[in-house]
Length: 203
Image (cartoon, rainbow, N blue to C red; front, side, top):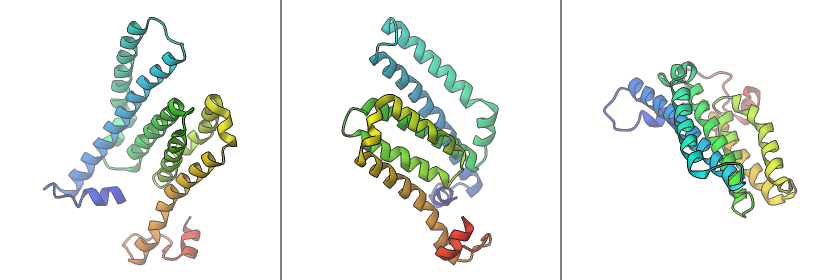
């Protein structure tokens, strides 16, 4: 809703409904693009660990597979249905793609000091996505397995935990915007969460 509100304020000369539907299409395209990039990155990671054979041939096969996978996903009934109209489900698909992309990027950087920045981003994306839909919380246990497989000693790092918690808290803090929104007494104002107590009851 917040992103859609901002999009309809852009001077595009289009109706609000058409602008929002274009935005939904952009979300869907973003999800497809990030998943395609993630597929190719996974190949690069497996190659660096010596899992692939005949590098040049494998590269073309992976590119072909990524393109076919992108087309299959992009034209699938569920994504297509949600991409042609503005709703939270297509944005959640984009968040799924972003979270998976960030997890793969962390895997690449896990041995470097910058890896904690990727953990921050992953946690931030999880926190933000809770504001959209709860589906991606199903990926949360997978994140811990992912970290354990790649670099288990990350769990002993106070800095990694701190950055992860900071990202999650900042992402979840988006929910607090409901309080000033409720104080304006909008037409739809379920439970009127215009205070911290009201916000707690709302949640």
